Length: 168
Image: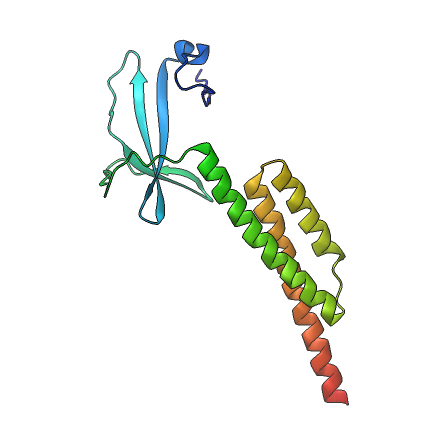
């Protein structure tokens, strides 16, 4: 039986019990390189077996996590530009706020056109609740849904307006 325990130490300087119990330790790394966020994975320790201790590039996408075992990390600049939680949270908050601004602007446009906004308003509200709970990706999904619904409603309102103009 294999058990995977995921842990994020609250105090990096304290040794927590799960690290003593674990047979191995796999670290996930994230850093900024230019304007890109890079990811890698490494095995810190693995009791009772040989292992590759080099950093290996990885990506996380819609099909899960992909590790590129034959690729190597070639860093430009220092890898010490680590991305800590406050930086990521502020970046995520900025992304959510930009999406929120887009959705609210679209909402104003649909209201001016006399379109239906109830579903989009509900999605915006769900996005705000997710933002408040610091569930940034969930918040972004709700706001994208709201923007898509508003764009579709605006397109329908524009098509109805054109149809009326043709009749008149």
